[in-house]
Length: 354
Ligand code: NAD
Image 1 (cartoon, rainbow, N blue to C red):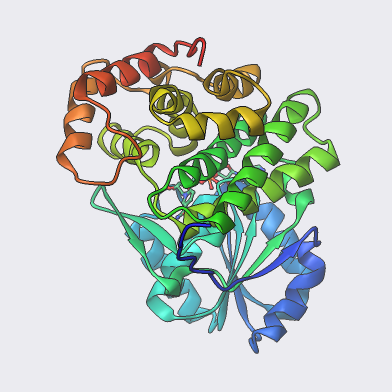
Image 2: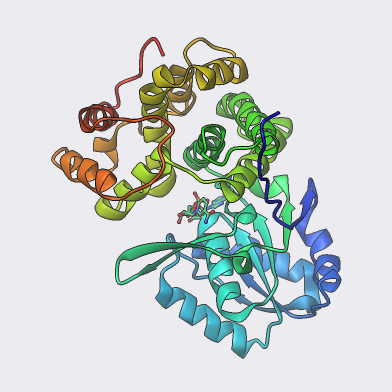
C-alpha cells in the first residue's frame, strides 16, 4: 500500500430517518433550542409542514434561498436569524438552501443541521460558493461543514425527473474526479466506487418509477458517498470546466455537470488506463463515457451546451480561461483537445467506443 493522507471530516449522519421525527432530538443533542429553518420559495410549504411537526424548537422560517448563494440573500437571512433569536440553523433543500445555511454558519459560527432533498452532495463538504455582484467565489472552511446531516428519503420523492438525474450526475462527477484526484487515497476510493455504483444503478430505475423507495434510498446513499469524496479530496478538470462555464455563461449548475462529465471522461480515459479499468468494472461496461451519457439521456435531460444557453463562440473563451488558471490535471490535455471536448459537449455528441 502506498503512503497516503486521509483527512476525515467530522459529521453526524442519520441515514433513512424521518426528518420531522428526529429534528427535535438532534437540536437538543447540539444543546440548542431555537432553530431557523431555511428553504427556497418552492419548498416553503413542505418546510412549513415540518416546522408544524417539530413545534416549539422552530424559532422562524426563512424561505428565500436562491441558486449560487447571493450575498444579498444571506444578509436578509442573517437579519431573520437575529430577529428570531435563533441559536441553530436547519437547512432543508438542495445545494442552494444548504449553501445559505453554510453562509450563515460562516458568519455566526452557529451549528447547522442539513436535510438534503437533492443529490448535489453539498451537505457533507466544507465548501461554500457565494455570489457577490455577479461574481462567484468559492471557499473551504471547517466552519461551513454541517454538524448533522439527516437523509430522509421521503423528501426526495417530489424531485422532478430532470433534477433527479442532473443532481445525480453532479454527484457521480464528484466521485469520478475523486478517483483521479492528486490527493486520492484508499478510503475515498472505496466511497467513490460505492457512490458511482449506487447512483449508476438507481438512476435508470428512477427513470421507470420515480417513487421506487429502494432506488431513492440507493441514490441517496450514493449521494452521501460521492459528496464525501468532494469534501475530502481536490477536484480537477471536470469541476474546473463546469466552474468556468457556470461563471462566464451563467449556465445552470447540475445541467452543466451532466453535459460535461461524459466528455471529460472520454478525453481522459485513453490517457489513464488504470482509471479506465476501474470505471469499466464499476459501471459494468466497456464504454464508461458512453454509459455516463446514456443515463441522463434516458431521462431526456439536455445533453448539449447549446440547449442550456452557451454560445458556440464562447468555447474559445472557456478554453482560454481554463488554461489561464493553474490547477492540477490527472493527465495533460492540449488546447486543441479541450476545444474538441467542448465542441462535442456543445453539440451533445455521444462519446463512441470509450
Ligand atoms: P437547488 O438546490 O438549486 O434546487 C433546484 C430547485 O429544485 C429549487 O427550486 C429547489 O427548491 C427545488 N428542489 C430541491 N429539492 C426538491 C425536491 N425534493 N422536490 C421538489 N423540488 C425540489 O439544486 P441543487 O442541484 O441541489 O444545488 C445546486 C447548487 O448547489 C449550486 O449553487 C451549486 O453551486 C451548489 N453545490 C454546492 C456544493 C458544495 O459542496 N458547496 C456541492 C454541489 C452543489
